[in-house]
Image 1 (cartoon, helix red, strand yellow):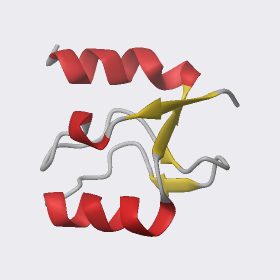
Image 2 (tube, rainbow, N blue to C red; image 1 turned 30 degrees about the vertical axis):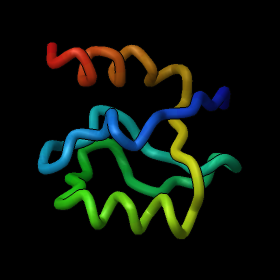
Image 3 (tube, rainbow, N blue to C red; image 1 turned 180 degrees about the vertical axis):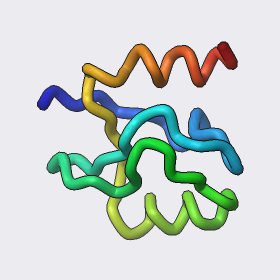
Image 4 (cartoon, helix red, strand yellow; image 1 turned 60 degrees about the vertical axis):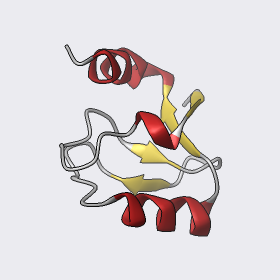
Length: 69
C-alpha cells in the first residue's frame, strides 16, 4: 500500500467517499462509500487520528471527486 496525504478540505461533506480514508499507518478510518455527515465529524476524525491518507491506487477516484466529475 502506497499512501498519499489528502487535505481534509477536499473531503465532500454529505456525499459518499470515492475512496477509503486511512491514517498514516494505513489503518482504515472510513470505508469507500461512507458519508461524512458534517464538518464537525471530519474534524473529530482528524483530531483523533491525525492527517488523512488514501492509497495511491485510489488517487484517481479522489482526483475525479475533487474536480466534481
